[in-house]
Image (cartoon, rainbow, N blue to C red):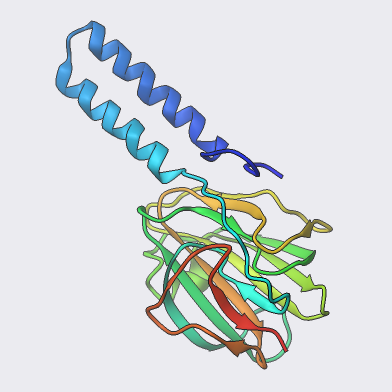
Length: 213
């Protein structure tokens, strides 16, 4: 799957090429201030799209964070693609976080969905239901079903997802990204033992969100 072994996400290459090209043009035309700005943009792009290696925990029942960021919601919820009451964990990604998204469990994608919508600040609770979003319904190897949803935000206007229905994912495997600030919602079975707290920071592919029953 894409970005498996690249130091930066391949989606960054057009932005980097444009930034460098404009920097070179400004250099030869002696426009030093614009050149500095374009070089700064290129540097930020490299930083934003960085793609570090991560090591998932050994517990096969552990649900790991799909995104770097901060937990802004933790509590009961319902979700259209899963039955009954669930637990939801929402992770806010600022522009300074790594934006590569990773599979929270090992299992098979049994359904996908995409909803057009608004671009509200993702820290607004309405963003879960009103913003543009793309989701995966995954059945873990243990039989538990969960949903992970990429939510576009005020600045993020481009959701990228490599996985489709029938795709098998391994815990910690890179499956997509969202450009420039966003949110991930994870819906878990009600009987999942939660291991994180509101306000806690997460590391994609490593932080344990909960333990499946």
